[in-house]
Length: 156
Image 1 (cartoon, rainbow, N blue to C red):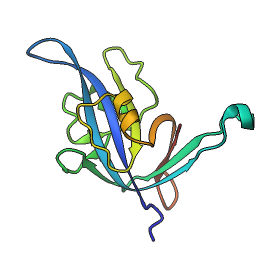
Image 2 (image 1 turned 60 degrees about the vertical axis):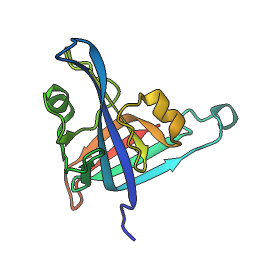
Image 3 (image 1 turned 135 degrees about the vertical axis):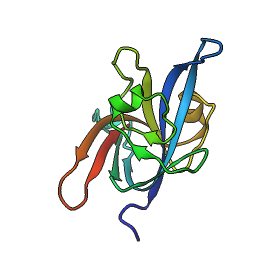
Image 4 (image 1 turned 60 degrees about the horizontal axis):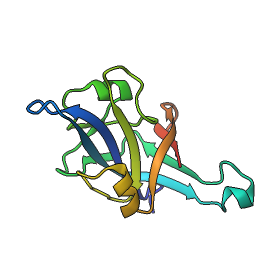
């Protein structure tokens, strides 16, 4: 059995201006990552347990993860957040970012779903009603040293 047995779907959601109508539209850039480790713990309600961080999700993504476009199946590559959100064509890239961006002229957010969950035209609120494990990223640690370079992602 592999040390990285799970699959997740990363949603990089951006607000882009339609060149024809000049209207803002929501665009889901969907990437399926195969070969990750998702460690999720759901604890008892905070009122009962007294623990603020009772629910926790830790995601481990090797730099060598198999990343493909959720719609086309074409390979994708990781790009750091600021460079990704500034890209004109995001079709062959994916990123990890915490919350929405704070960069002027750059609108985007990232969340992930356990398993393959490809919903190109849905908002996060609808995806949360369709799937059990929809996670907001709360932290990202890039571990680019040692024998297994990887990202450690915290979420809830």
